Length: 118
Image 1 (spheres, rainbow, N blue to C red):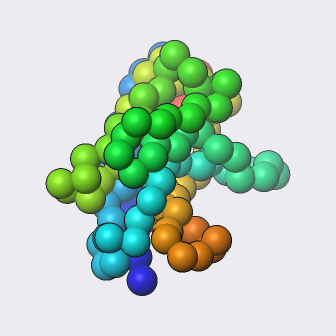
Image 2: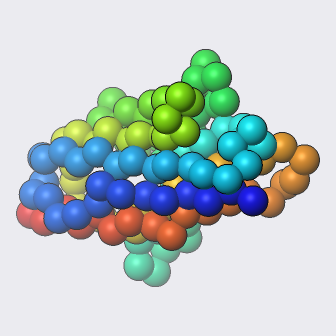
């Protein structure tokens, strides 16, 4: 099994920045792509950003392009999400996701709340 633990969420004013971290443990060798999704109240969970195992392929949601940056440190089993120029509509619970070898079922973290105030 793989376990994911997120940190770094909180309350920030619009225009501010936050950095989320997600540390993986367990069967690390089974992890392929990692990334972040978010879910606001009443909305479906949506992709924010994903990065491939080697870091060579990165995908961003259109809504965060130019503002958010995803990075991955495999030596630390950690994926980061640097969020700049935050907007109220970025308010959501942010979940770390890991795609694993030999299964179509991803692993999710417990989520971290990000609240952007005006």
